[in-house]
Length: 200
Image (cartoon, rainbow, N blue to C red; front, side, top):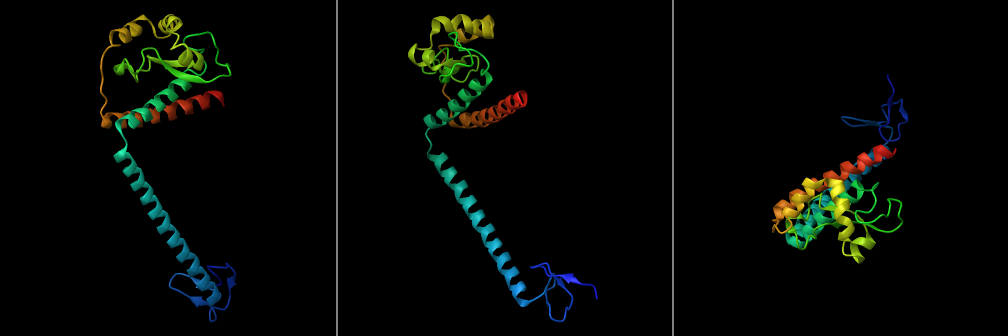
C-alpha cells in the first residue's frame, strides 16, 4: 500500500489501520489531527480578527474624514504639493538667492504670489518653487531676487500669466480638494520613483 504523509507532522504513515483519516487528509495519530484542527481554527480566528480590525480602521478613517474641516483638507493638499515641489527642484538652487542644492539648512516650497493673497495660484506649480527657509521665512520670499530668477526659470509668458491672475479669487470645494489630493499623491509617488531610478 502506498505510504501517505501525516498532514500535521509530515511523517510517513505506513499503517493506515492506526491512522486518523478525514475526507481530505490522513494523520499519523489523533494528537496530530487535533493539533492540525487547532492550528486551522486559530488561523481562521486570526483572519476574522484581521478583517474586523481592517473594517474598524476603514470606518475610523471615514469618520475622521467626515468631520475634517475644509481648512484641514486644504492643508493636506498643500503639504503634498509642497513635497512635490521640493523633490522636483532638489537639484536647483534657492528660487530667490544663491544657496545651492548642497546647502545644509531647511528647504521649503515658497510661493511667489502668496497663497493668502492669490488664492487662485495657491496650487499653481509655476508659482511655487524651492526656497531656503531664510528667504521664505525671514525675508518674506525675497521677492526682489525671486522675480528675475522665476522669469528665467518659467519664461516671460508664464510669469505674465501668474501676474495677470494674482488677484483672482478661488474657492475650492471639498470634493475638488479630495480629487486633487489623490492626483498629488500619485504625482509625489511618481517623482520619488523617477528620482530613485535616476540616482540608483
